[in-house]
Image (cartoon, rainbow, N blue to C red):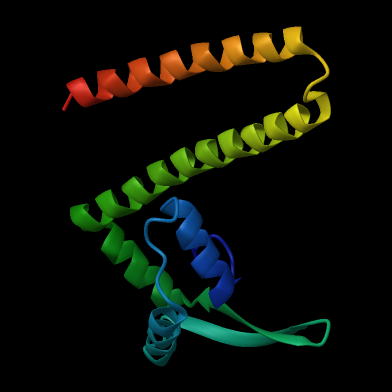
Length: 145
């Protein structure tokens, strides 16, 4: 994450949550001691910035941290973990987009509720078709195991 841009600890927690679709979110009590350790080893640096009156600590990789990360990327297991997180990130982005659309559909329902029976019937038909497609794909994936 820090290879892309400097981040605060809070931003890292949010990004880890997004990358793992909420499956792995370390507690601040785990993350901040790890950041302090990485800083003491010279792998990252921390600098304080102010956002309005609020103080924020931003972390970024040092050249030594970049070198260490490059060495880790040569280890196949580590590279596999990074690739898995990246693929889950794409899946998480897709899931977030679907959730956004469902929220929008719910808002539309609030607007038309009880007003247009034909419209609601058509929406129900579309949702049932979508459910059939998702169920078929899920069955296909489960059968492939």
